[in-house]
Amino acid sequence: MGKEKNPRRVGENEAFAKVKMLRTSPQKLNLVAALIRGKKVDKAIADLTFSKKRISQDVLKCLQSAIANAENNHGLDVDELVVSEAFCGKNLVMKRGRPRARGRFGKIMKPFSELTIKVKQVGETA
Image (tube, rainbow, N blue to C red; front, side):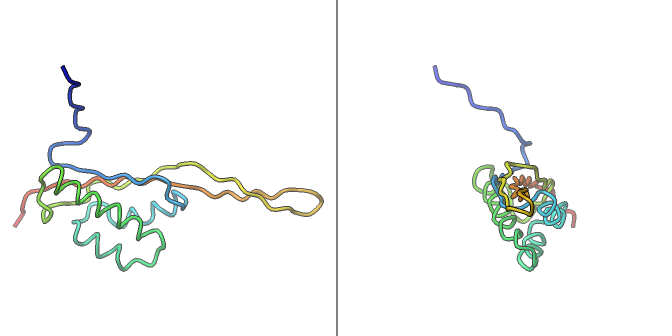
């Protein structure tokens, strides 16, 4: 009398990885996520490796985690993987401040983001 297994949240030929608390704004993170959407994972890794954006290294780690999940947990072929989805969302915002003239207080917002990358196995087209 054990608990039943949780149903899969993704399809049989998919795997995903999620990163929370990335210290950048969702707008900046979405620029990097848009670079890899719809690409084969080899090309996406190359694009992220040579990107000049600071956050691209964290996106690369998330992509490699999704690839490892697909290979080890779901038994998918790494050579046939494509980034099917890459999206980001808002997380918490640290609020800091700076004293300004005439006793006022200037707000400094330090946003955090979260990133989800989903990879999908597609058949050979050649």
